[in-house]
Amino acid sequence: MGKKYEIERKFLVEFPDVSELDVKRRIGIVQTYLKSGGNGSQRRVRSVDENGRVKYTYTEKIFLTPVTREEKEYEISGEEYRSLLSSERRDCPPVEKVRYCFDYHDQLFELDTYPFSDKLAIMELELNSPEQKIDFPDNVRVLREVSDDGRYSNSALATAGAFPEQQIGENS
Image (cartoon, rainbow, N blue to C red; front, side, top):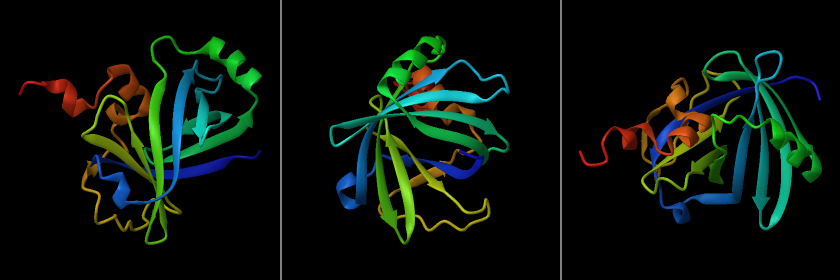
């Protein structure tokens, strides 16, 4: 379990027609943030349900740049998961989302959809380098990159219960 570096870019997209994507996996995720680690790391646990099979993971991340993080992640038992929930951050509700993993031109995209929006979603792509060119799917409308906008982090979305665009004025 050595250090792993993750290079990931995130994009705000219009909620696509999922049936038009080459979906490989559909995963229900409940992500709970824990109190920060001693090294200032972000800590979380996840309950991951794929086809009725539930597994649990523990993740610790240190943010190096907006798109690069040092990450430690491993599977834990249901008992460890329930025990870790006792150090849940009270200021951030758990994040519930459905993740669709799909291929497009040899790239594996992850599309996260949230129960509070049927209009917007977050699409992520892990890269080999921050400069890597991305070939976006034709049938997904990318609104803008949000990799370095904290308002689109899972914890910020869960706390707000809406995308920033939807908080400004539902009536406008």
